Length: 162
Image 1 (cartoon, rainbow, N blue to C red):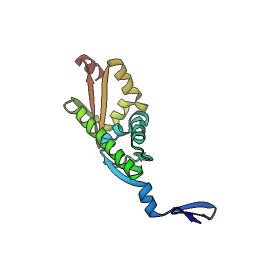
Image 2: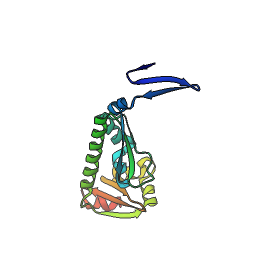
Image 3: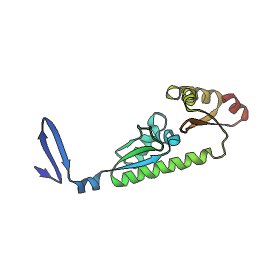
Image 4: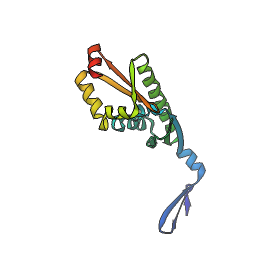
């Protein structure tokens, strides 16, 4: 039986729910937002903290940035139309603030594979260096290389981190 535009049926042992497309448009939408691969880690955050914050603030149901095979990464935003629009705005804001934060900061380039070693498992190596030198290290991945930005209150701290 159908009620409120949703019908359910039993087919081959599976429960199938069909939703009227007009309801789907009102209640859920899916959009793809291209994010430069070099900046996708900033959108995800340590332990997905930034991604979870964006989901919480926007009300989006789901944000998927797992497939990072392409550049730009095709980030999938799912939720109510207004929540998806807010998630898109928050991601754009994060990307803009990250780009501005690194403007003018000196960097050096390393092969992308070496940058992964520099970062370490779950950021362990870079966190160790940051803690012991009082610096902030950002790594921006490009196709074959990575830019490593090191900021600190004193030049000697930056030199030690290098």
